Image (tube, rainbow, N blue to C red; front, side, top):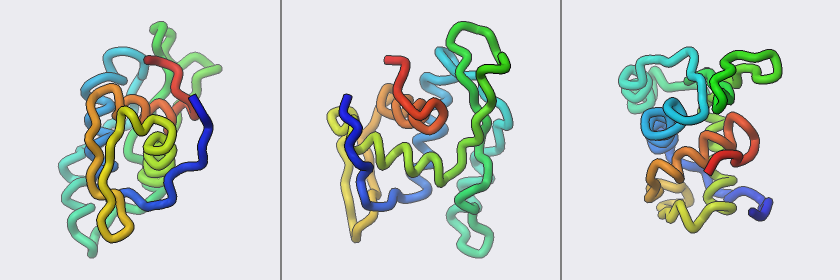
Length: 136
């Protein structure tokens, strides 16, 4: 793995939310992560679609810690707050460093589509939570 600079284009916020949901549902929750503060993602999605309500970049969407070996909430494994900002940074990094898993499309200087599967979504969440890709 190389440590290239992240992609410089922003990522559409609804796409970030979908990636987070899919990473949790398809992989992380079952294999390596303990999830805390699991909100109503439908409500968050509706707020993303309504500019008057919106979602702040630093609003905590979920709290996650590494729990691959079942030793949940050990002191050396603090919960990490995942926000739109941390998720976007992880996604932009992954689009550069794992481009073979994450083909994407840019429209009007915004990443508006990423063709990802469970592995690609999980890579993004691992980067957001662990600051590296550890599993898979």
